Amino acid sequence: MGGLSIWHWLVVLAVAAVLFGGKGKIANVMGDFAKGIKAFKSGMKEEETASAAPQVPPQVAAGPTRTAGEQPAHDRG
Image (cartoon, rainbow, N blue to C red; front, side, top):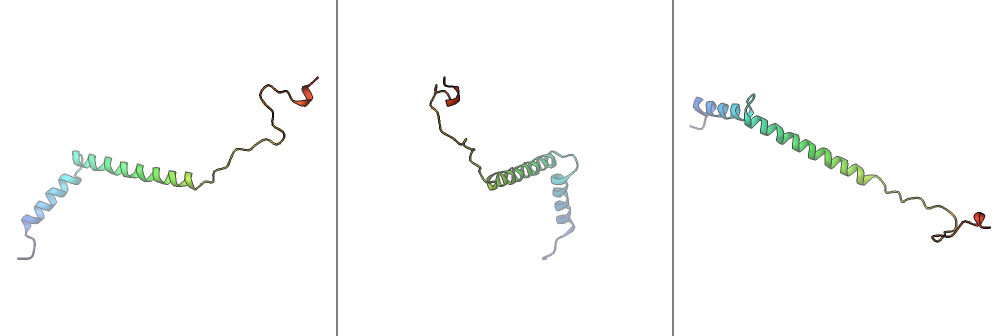
């Protein structure tokens, strides 16, 4: 009463063959789904490594600042 008969196993095997069979459309869809998940995971890893890298501010040149149009002291006549 609690066991599975041969017919139950045949149905289970038929469903598994349709889902995971050789060149079936469902197998292609599942493969594309798996590729999407892998791409998502690799994108998340790249984002983690990019956010983990310290942000370095741009270097500021030392010395006095000039206004637009002002010439350096050595160029003045």
